[in-house]
Length: 265
Image 1 (cartoon, rainbow, N blue to C red):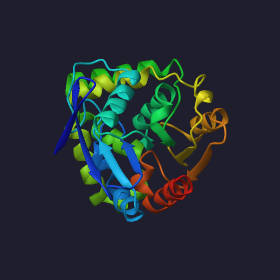
Image 2 (image 1 turned 45 degrees about the vertical axis):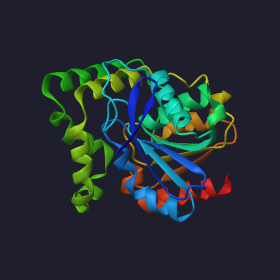
Image 3 (image 1 turned 45 degrees about the horizontal axis):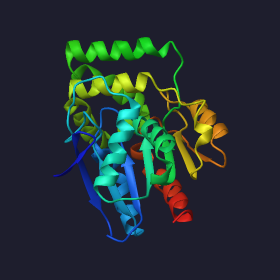
């Protein structure tokens, strides 16, 4: 396990691929860890890319600081990690919460990013979503993370995929169960205050948007909103996939990501 001090916490990370390859930094969703990106590592490394995956504050092997957290804080964690590792510029890939961190980082530290890939994410939530996040926080604090497993799997994967791929879902269930309640609560506070829609037109780095066609939590419409505001951005809609499109639709997801990264090497 490798860790680095960044922004006052220990950040757990894994770096794979050729030492001289362009760096691709991958930021995971709420309730997962860097292992969420396992299906992407070998295809990227095989193309000569250096893959940096890390656990977000409150998740996996990174520090579980006291909540609440903010997206500015989570983006500052990522920036400090990159600087501590001597990485001056990176391709950044974020899914769900990771995409929110990516947008926030692109606004705060555009100098660090060569490209930005935003997957199954959002730039903001309607006011009524605050109650939903409050309910999720209350559920975790009162009953732990096990109560979140079944509903989360249902939101993240289509029924057809879930029925046929139980072995692929087992590690995802374990990531959800293993999430520290304080880390989950801290990140829920951050996500619930997401509001960058009116600011992301300032993002100038080449941007790819990937979304599962049937994602119920961050639907295609949210990605159209992002695409309309980031000039020159590209969008790929993956048929039949839900929220964790990188796991449910590995081949089309990887093909879209690799095309984009190869075009901007």
